[in-house]
Image 1 (cartoon, rainbow, N blue to C red):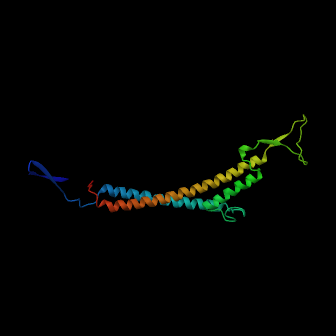
Image 2 (cartoon, helix red, strand yellow):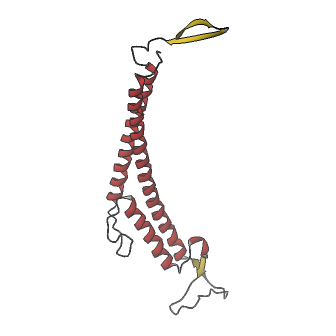
Image 3 (cartoon, rainbow, N blue to C red):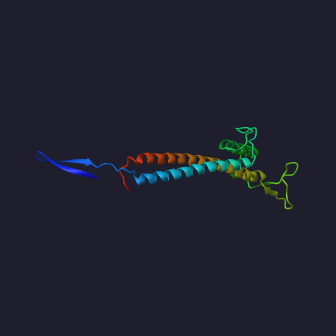
Length: 186
């Protein structure tokens, strides 16, 4: 609040404003905002750390090691980079097995072949069709690469939660520093 002082000066009215003293106690609003930001920040950091540890433990329980032709060769699959390398090499090997064709590009059924590589005919002289095993193998490859991709996403989300939690903690401390300067009293 301010107290105006009126003074007349040559047909003009001049108003001088004198500020009252700042409150002697910190603003409660800034205090509550600071506490809230610090609690949310600490919780976010703990959640990010827990997510990182959980993802690492789940990956290590699988005892997977990248093959020697992977980008990171013969490395235990634990973190996001080894997960990416394993996913990439699974896709590469699957494409090699299927002559560069993806699941959707392959026929659902293929002719049954005898030991000479000739199509087997049924009693009516029709070609016997069987499920395409190469196409079916894409289901396993896709499941594995999707699981590895989710692991990478879990690491990214954990890192994001941890960093944002740190920022919230810093914001809370910043509000504690600013609360003494704030003119709010309620």
